[in-house]
Length: 463
Image (cartoon, rainbow, N blue to C red):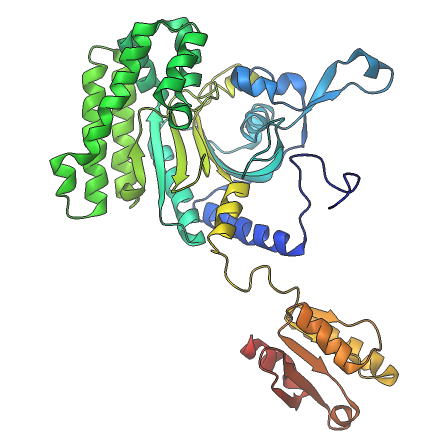
């Protein structure tokens, strides 16, 4: 058992080489897809002024911010003036307010950096973790929501996921549902925080939390009755007889929208939210992702800055989500003094990695080998020639490890095998006399000699 002196802080992790290669594989795919959708890269500092973060995430979020005590003579006061970045969205809003004159009218950015939360560590949940965000600022069009969902969907498909669902809802639709149920305005936020836990703690748990948060019991019952009554819609005849999954999901979404319209009848705010949800579904259908998008009126998401559509990605047998986001038209205005429409989504890299590892979804070459080939040193006289060969192969864009000691050949080959390096090359006395290089395939044991000028091409063919 490792000593606590050598273990990282709770909720933090060390990443060994194989772990890093898997992370870089996933991040590479995320970047490639985001850039195909026209998103540009952005980075922000790990540390923000504490007033930048406080008050942006709701009551629960404020409690999870890692605060940094004042330094020097002020340390004993216990006061904090800085904090570790809690997410990538609030820093983005600050950047837009600071650099708006340098940014395009429609600013589409992606950002892949670590964030920190003083949360309770659990499976797939850490205190330091990466977020992979995409955001669009400057447009109120529902095309933005659909495009963000399409980008996230493309990422997951390219990684090998097929059983995911992008659940969407709308804060205005939720407001209309709350008002129609009789929940008073000052209890909306507490009700949403409790409702966000419906899939985790069930109806009884939410009822209990409603009571603890001072929400009228009859209003809470009407609210929960609405969601419970939605469950049978998935078994409606029109859905059961659908010819394909896209049509099946579209039929379900249509049925759910119909019930929402009925429940919020006469409520202008709720009706607007339902209309915008309908537009998102239409645009998502045009983008070819209808079978992965489902309307879920129980989805609330706890962060207080959301103003419109909200989204979350779930996969089978995973507690929690692989990512989430939504529209936050008022957040930039907290820094700029005028509202800038904005919508974004964050993929949870850590949870994606956990699920991919458990399901063995990584290609076999990812994380398995540090190099394509290892150059061995035949004897003291061949050291310089081995160094030159290694450099030639590196110049040919191969990943090359050079064994640094003059050891017995068997020991060098054994080391290569233990590292999973598929090929070994060597220049023995006979090879040097003929201007050749010996290539040994560590996977099959086969060995052949080739002219030195062809060795790089031969290795690339075999990899």
